[in-house]
Image (cartoon, rainbow, N blue to C red):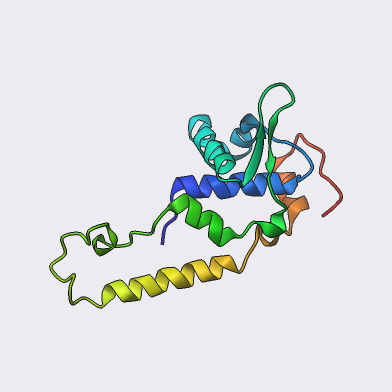
Length: 151
């Protein structure tokens, strides 16, 4: 299963914010760290804020931070939120698509089970698990920012 760039960027934003949880970050800092499109990242940040994953503050001194502790952010739920309803084959589309095998095909059940297993595995992990090496991540991503000693 290939995740969309939107999900990839969402996870990167959360990882970035988790490396320095007591500091706010700006879109420009994250754009610079990951060398990604500011336009695309702005959409991602807006979505993450609307979804309650991050808190955003506008204006001077503003920026974004995690809305919850990293231990409370399940990777599986973030991926579900950013990916939307999985459609690995035509038969998963609303209305079932046009496949001639639709009524007698066993593949849909197998693909459903695979998707469930994929998310079950991701649900085992939190953002805290992903960022256990916070100091190393911070050194890579925040060369211009102080690295906190709380890791």
